[in-house]
Image (cartoon, rainbow over all chains, first blue to last red; front, side, top):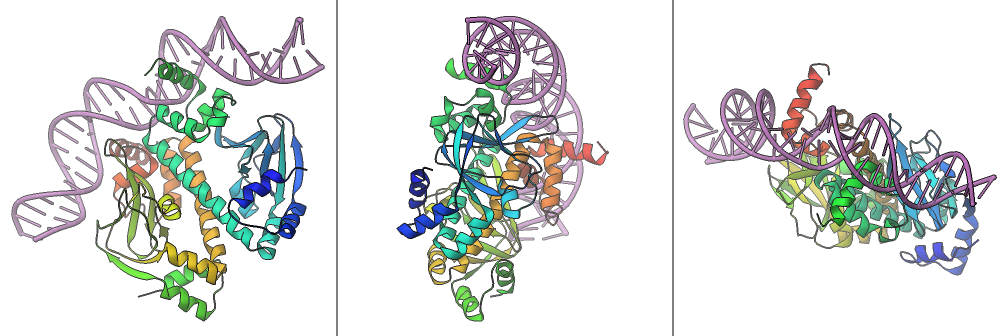
Length: 194
Length: 194
DNA sequence: GAAAAACATTGAAGTAGATTAAGAAAACCG
DNA sequence: CGGTTTTCTTAATCTACTTCAATGTTTTTC
């Protein structure tokens, strides 16, 4: 398994000794996913934090009408989980699905707790990771409260430039909170210079 | 200054020795706020995490049209900050204002970093605090993407039962993302049993 | 306790975005 | 490749919510 990306990801915030790196790596479980393969479904307990080394996953909920609402995308070098379920180890509401054939590394909740005990630096690492998530999540919430769909789309383009042209438009529409039909109209407007 | 509430808040997640408690308390700076007093304004750097021992604060942004969008309320026993600005120590976009005369305890960013070094347990405490914020923020975002205003209001009532009857309705309207006018109509519907 | 300020309600008119339905274009897969 | 499924677009109709404007009602302030 290729662990260079995840070790590099971690080294952005904490420095590990070679022994610590080796120990961390020993806790990881690699997994390959086919396109459309489900990593997690509503009602299940999320037992792993998942790091994407290749491909792209997406996390979403289904509402009462069966409409999908995308909470997050996880391209290469990102983490994903149903955090409510992962932290509480209770059944969650999120679906996590591979958008493309993907390679991931999984860290179980138990391993993560063990890691906090053995190498306290990891407590710092995951704290910082969550801090960043929280900040961007708050910004996205404020965007949804205060900006029209067009602006939210432009913000999406800034935040995920690599994804804009590789995701189905309906998934982007769902992420910014509009229907595919409206998204289509909006794009026409945008290109026409509106 | 009365530190019993904040020590109790902390003891929910980590156990401190009396010496550690004393040291922590020595880093806190008490502050009294009048109604409408601003703790933070757009463009300023957020230098403190603020814990509310009494009263209630609110965090909001102003959009281009001067409309207020409430990101969070902080009643007694809650923490509040402009997290983007606090973590990055760069100018932020949030206003934090006292809804009522309030008593708060402030922990500076420097003190917090110092605390992480001196008493690593605090790294755990704040990690857990942020984990919980992130989970509830994600849920709120999904609510905004998938539920009509009425349902979002009912969720608000569940989340902040103590605030429902003590906040101006326009602030609740702003929190759930509708205008005061629409909120008024919605409440009429709700009471009529709709 | 009066004046001022902030908050709340109502109604009419307008709009961003949803829904439905249908056809066209891609993308997938055997 | 060719058939199936998924995605994308367009257009007509519909609705949840906004805006504006006016009025009434609390709450604040001094």
